Figure 1 (cartoon, rainbow over the protein chains, first blue to last red):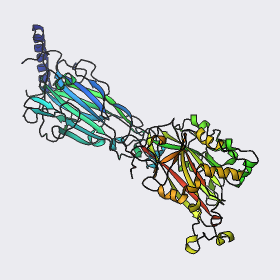
Figure 2 (figure 1 turned 90 degrees about the vertical axis):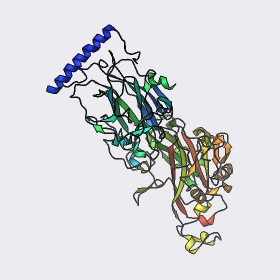
Figure 3 (figure 1 turned 45 degrees about the horizontal axis):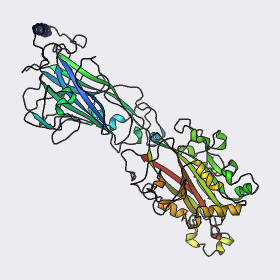
Length: 253
Length: 356
């Protein structure tokens, strides 16, 4: 069934054909001579666009709620900006991923995600007296990344057949219905700032196809926690990071 | 409604993922010609907060020299905390800030006149604003003395050690505890030896002062409330003042210093209550503005007590000590010193029962 986002009109069909033609040319070029399609060459959404909606909680209270959709600049704003964190604090995010295309319909796409450390100056942010008393002497580097715990998971919840029942896209990890993707300290989970690495996300674990189809949506959850025994050496320390998602056209349907 | 989540209503929401194999990190494939798109949420920042307890204090010891100053009129009940009656203070008079003007000082600034211990306990340290005198520094041993040092105590002497506590930058529970650093008999002179209460032999080593000195812990809603306590007394002579102070705080039936030290060594100390009149603390109202803790009963109930707020609402505490007149000879020449510890834990996510 063709969804409403696909506009079946003569003009669109021609455009779709045009894109296919370019895509085919590009692909055959790639076979003979590697062509790098970087961000400047591919207009967001023209062939394949990724849309991410999200909702954020901090210590149980909703912070932000943004529906997916709307075109905009390729780089979005931060989703988490929190200060005055204390041991026992926690935050969680629910992300809803779909693909789209400005013209025609998007191809099936592989999904990838990662948390990437961003270099900021002065993650230690000064050593105040309680930190020094706890033995903190590292003037140039904070310790937040070693104590902060991260969890990434498939926020799918329970379903009956194709019908979602409960616990889906709620940003709350429920081990009985959700599936972990990655868990550990921030320093163990996050990739370095200049890293090429992504973590593969599989929307269809029970099928051979790993691709998100144009009529599908997948929810991923990201949560963080500062344990209650985190320690005084962390006072005033800072951490900056990016949360990133990627959709890559699938080879298979 | 689930289907409206993030505007995903027109999509089939992928359900139970089942068992997923270990996620593999792979390199980017930017050299291929396939369409791709990335959505980045950059510049997320998490910054940890701060919890730092800072103190200022004044110590009044009403012994022989303060009594002289009182009877000569240079101090009165209206200004008992004048510099000439003080044994020590933080900040010291030369710092240019008074205990009263401290109220509007920014305790949490780097240049603040409040103390962090133990570093600021050393009056010879550059950053310290503690008084430098025989009561605060042991020049022979080249080290700072504890906050409360009593030597040559006489019956009817009393002392008042008042603290201003400030929390930077977040609410916290606060506890107080005392430790007997030193106590010494310092020999037995003749009147001591004749005193039937004076132990001899092996028991004579530590002195009896800690068992005779009486202690009260009070908390006021303001610094003025503490000054008003004394300002309301009518005494004109030293002995009258001592008697009135001992009566005011009912020091005759108060816990001894040793009992105070023992009681506050439980857990992380005696729990304090930012709103002691609200019923969570064990004790009684001395006046509508001054609460007196019942030390023997363990202080505040942890379940009901209130956290201290940062900065503005500083805790005003007072430790009153006195030697009632009838416990006389056995304490002659005894001395002791006491360290006090104020301990704070974050209020957030905390039930206030103390980490240890």
